[in-house]
Length: 159
Image 1 (cartoon, rainbow, N blue to C red):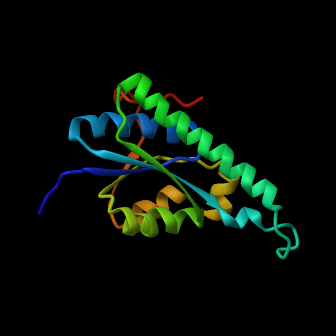
Image 2 (cartoon, rainbow, N blue to C red):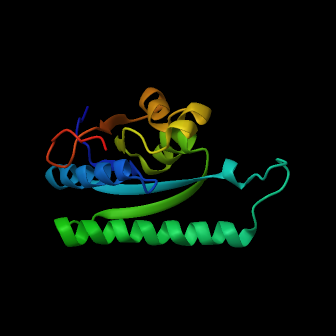
């Protein structure tokens, strides 16, 4: 049985924690000769309005998708410019981030390592929805590396 980590999944949400995990994933991918899939899951629960039966307009969803696509293209360019690393694909999915990251995406793309930040949501969102990182760590179909240090393995200073 191989222990190589040749197909790394990096979920990103625009947070500083996610971007740190992306940088660390690029460094690991370079040493392991691995491929990276960057994934942003647009949480469909946010499309429900106050009454739970109205949806956000298609224009809003389209704009969110465009903004997410630009963000991930920028990450891919960052990896190229700063690490000369290009073996990256990016993906946008819709649904529950917990389920998409833990099972659905991995089944489709055969990732054998997930690298993600310790937290991306604010404290209120974590309390209401639960931490995506905690869920993924406990339920994922692949190994999970939770990033708590910077790219040089130094502890991250809390602001």
